[in-house]
Length: 151
Ligand code: GDP
Ligand code: MG
Image (tube, rainbow, N blue to C red; front, side, top):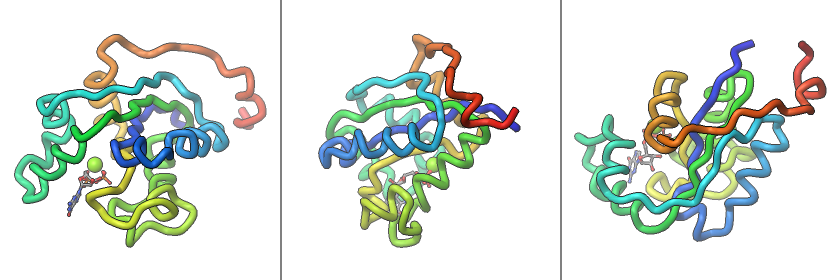
């Protein structure tokens, strides 16, 4: 069982559409552990750093405009295989390919307004956590773990 951390972000459209509670609820109900959370509105440079690997894409300028259009909710969630499981919960990048029951499948229609972000690998998760939470994240022992994990 790989205990991991992942960076999950509710994008400006998710905040504007009052989906913050719904998205947090899903991660809480699953059994994952909230390690950090804040509402922030970072500038262009910060978002360009976050999406640096997409800098060559035709949609990059639009993506940065979208992501800087309002506040986002930045979060760190922990748990077994939370990076891969978190991506499953978000659904495919394109909501049209996201299964019903996933966040994007249930609440989004277009790829350019897909309401949430989740790290795609353990390495990128740690990189994104450092970028969004340079102040560090809280450590705490969830008392419910005996009811979530067998060992
Ligand atoms: P993710 O990891 O599932 O978020 O997907 P990517 O890392 O490939 O892309 C990052 C974000 O860029 C996506 O979540 C979308 O918001 C946006 N994006 C990706 N592909 C496209 C596209 O073809 N068109 C537009 N408009 N946005 C895109
Ligand atoms: Mg990605």
